[in-house]
Image (cartoon, rainbow, N blue to C red):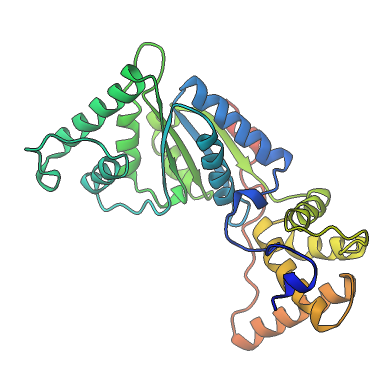
Length: 302
């Protein structure tokens, strides 16, 4: 029997998979999501979200896809690993993943780049103008985009009517994406909405844990985590959602092993000590995250 069943959960509360139903919308995440949805509805084109490793970008992208599914007249695709060799490979992937209809005589593997651009432009005109649909491309791990692909995206953003962009683009990437964009002023100028996700504060850390516990079906009147446990978790994870989730998973397993009814400070410290011992024994050391808030939101004001 799994530990979450023993504790009265109906689902795994701290899975690291980006399940949008378990994604806690902090004020920052909610602001980012709401703003992106507004930009998409207005068809303004390019949106960029920056954030350190583990700040919730991938979970935000899945939540965005969930919201797009609920809305009508949306055609969307998400790219999870945008490591394209060249423009041809990228354009070909768009044609395939958006299920663009090609004339019978067209051989996708032999078409030149100009023809591929033309095929995509005709697709966007048909869907966005003729059929009045909104075409959205979401790219996670956008820091992996090379300058050539970013230039191709800039060209695709040139496809527009007098009123709106034909392609709505959402990039979510680590802060390494920022200097790449800074090398391309004509791409930077096209960003309609830009935002930076920072680690959570102590209150949001507490709320995230309680939210996931509730979503997993825990309904006991007795709190599962003590106030001291929340403080200890925040102190160790520094508010990074991914670290919080992974630590809480280990903490609940330790709770079962120690045959206790609630997570206290000692349990959290025991788990942290074991993790540190493992890292030291493995010779891995403790990797320090990039400093939170390297690029503050005020640096990206529109």
